[in-house]
Length: 471
Image 1 (cartoon, helix red, strand yellow):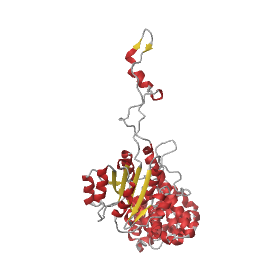
Image 2: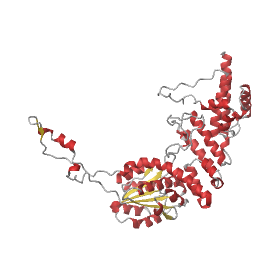
Image 3: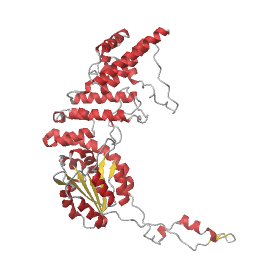
Image 4: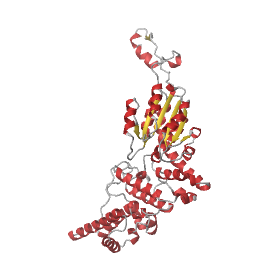
């Protein structure tokens, strides 16, 4: 290959990637001169013009032009998967001719444009959303990731329905470290869902199956559930149930340790045979070994401790259901249902904005609980505290979890302080989230810290660990 050929390939690659950047950042067609260059290069390289159109999905493209399928199945440079025996991955070959260079640059451009490009703008139908999700799966496969990895929002495993045919297969590479890419896709997906006409989509069970359950989709359903009925409502329930089941698996895994009670060293062990610690007894009496008689004389017995600290008999959860707290509301209802399934634990669940809803009768069914919430604006926690107060009949055996951003101007803090002083285990939580910024009222954050109950903020695991300590 001559120096002129190398320079030509470099210029072609540079021009195609300038076209990609132009289309991504302008959120529309690429600059006309760059688009003309791309078409001429595609024509010269015997590549279909559909490769340049972000509105043509990858599935359609590889179906029409099967010869391109291996190109979309190849990992991008630096994202090759290891061999079957754990051997180091082989680096992707660099094209050595103009056609290969143009083809590879256009394939990469296609993957990125379909995931982030102009076809994600404007009105969105369920079909377009489903096609976009499939295109993202092809991108994930090219990055060596399982389907759904880039669209996770902290709920656990990916939500994809499976790898696309030839689009990455059983990828096992861990998620890439570029969190901005994940955040960008999550924001884009949430925006697309907001622009979908969900009422019409939910009437069609086939279209609903194509939807990927996510927090953004769940929020839209909860906001609009008052306008749903018949088949649309049933399909909405199924979508909510799918998301709840996926998130519940993650939260149950984190809570598995909570169900095992903790030994209380203040309770002496019962001196009965079944509690006898044989190994420790033998070890502690080895000084009494008689080598002549070959006998061990035991003058001290050691027993295992079986006394347990009793769990708090009541767990009262008070959660802000205003619009900014949707994620916390969803995760709280699932946590409440899991705690309610524990033996000897009574769970009360109250949701509030400027009204209060007692969700205790439905606490075992998170789907039904979510459908009974009424997302809105404004906060009046004092109403919820007044409704929850009669549930506290034994403060020492009661844990109170209050989840809010505490931008609330009712007289709620004096009540919570009284509960804390009476012996209740008070756990204020500023938010339950895994990504993104969240603001907690700094005035009340300082007040809670002053009474020995600092505000938790972060992933649900922090709340689980705190409740575990209380229990």
